[in-house]
Image (cartoon, rainbow, N blue to C red; front, side, top):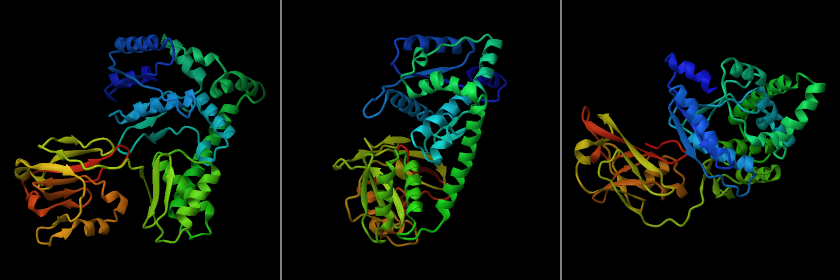
Length: 399
């Protein structure tokens, strides 16, 4: 894969950087890193090496290593992270998912493209339909050398068991099984996408559409990056979230997150740790971290919008949470209004309002994410300004 991409980079078609994730699990891990560095040096490819810590709490080694690796991918600034999964990898993935009792979503196998996080890079797997033998033939033709993971020869891991022990039996009886499984995965992907779209658009009756309600909850958990519960637990979550009366205050706990329903929409956020009073001074930095679990605020230079640069140049700016009684005048010709009413109009759930980082200037509210800038501090047409946006990891920015 890297050799293919390096040719495109030499032609100026792409900007290329290599990434090697060092798990530290094999005694040969340092040698693998050295081999990757040498491969890239010979081709003048910049390479980053990221050492990760594999958390084995509650999951197997293979899953824990994968989680650490994909977290490293998600932190990248590039548009895409290309992986060399091929046809055999796809077939193994689909079989593993079926043996674990997956639904249509899991039967899709690995997608060619998928986002790693909102606003972040995408995973790209361009070789999913290419047989492993063709890749080996290409490598030999190009005189490429590679390193084998010694654990691939052991069958203790489920994937290795399928590859080493089951696949040869299938090859003898069904030589085209990998192509057939890949075709099935594409059919499953098409079916899944259609069902997801219909489930999102279809009206939901309060208590009679149990299957549709469960699908909605599954969609929501996937979008929030949370693991799927058991089938029984999912059905119970759907019953409570969608079967309760519209004004019910439903609260469920799943994966250390609070799951709530507000105005017909589901919301998830990490369980609060007992929030204490906080204040973070701001002296005009273009990016400001607000502390653990509070994200950061980034500022973009703008003309005729955002905070007036002349106001920002003054002293006395700071971020703090809502205390109650704050007021904001969103429009120069309009009245000052309570922040509580503005948040209600924007549909901000009550439990999220106290977590919003508010920007104050000498005790006066100047900006609230998702609400706007007080007219006193707003940039005049044609003048220089700073446009603020609040970003929490895994969430869309709020400006």
